[in-house]
Image (cartoon, rainbow, N blue to C red; front, side):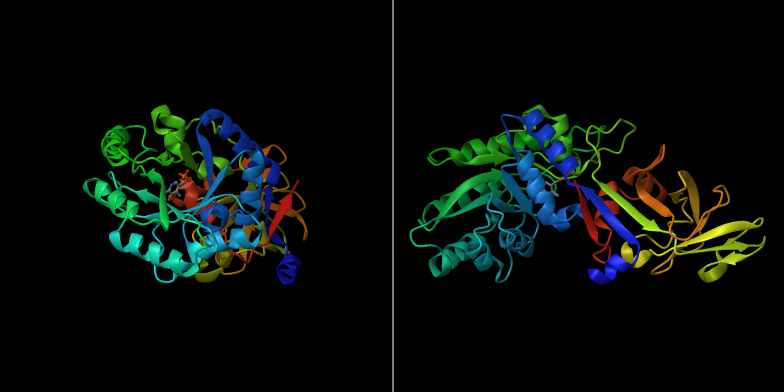
Length: 377
Ligand SMILES: *Cc1c(COP(=O)(O)O)cnc(C)c1O
């Protein structure tokens, strides 16, 4: 990290923004409980600090994709319930038991493995809690609706494990032209009612991600699993004003400045050729940090001196070039904003997503570990 700090390129994340977003979402969905999704290093923001901010803002649960991510949170002293969003593979089931992560299960083998792992490594007399996921139309992971009753029955035969949650996941909740989510809700309801007949313990029922939590009140149930909205980006690719504040900024400092004459080819392949004499600033950040090679050729900009400036030529592994034609007197050390605000101008993750033809999730998850995360506030 010390080395990375010497290179002036970094991500700033505002903790108070994350906390406010969680508070806002918790209020919107109440009395449903908020589960903050912090997989993929907190959508690129930093999992531990993000998790702490969300908990402070009112999240009662956390969710991660893989066991390692859950262990990272436990090692940081976080002791909220942590849901694993997929069934752990290999030795993952045992690690889930040891670190008291709540696994999601959707196979017979998964139940048997969880029982064995608990017998071997569980705390004395303590039953391992788990959730079952039903596939109602995403067709990624989950048991078929018709298998749910069987799984619940199988699990009920073992005192080592306790079913404490049932959930499903939407495939089109972010698509305003689709109502497929309603079909998923009805299918889920039908099998859940059936499966929970005769079950005495409390079972947390949940289905909504950020898009569904906002769009479908009837999908909020006992808990919502929100990621993208809590970081401040809309899950829905529309023109509407974002409800939540974005917490991430990507910044760097100019490392070199030069005048180039007209007709100069820039960077690898000379993909860009200057039309007239201009000032080119070099910025020490590249595709190894998550700024795609084509960021300039697809229209990507940065802010320097409070003005939007074009990225020109191929982005290289560690550096990129900016045409500063419109900025007077750019110098080494000047702040460059790739994501965030400078003066009255702003570049958002949605701008990036549009330029690159991707979704905002990919933009924020795409910044690599070489960029230090600096926490502000
Ligand atoms: C990632 C994920 C979420 C969170 O989705 P957002 O759209 O970021 O709110 C919820 N549930 C599951 C199963 C996920 O994989």
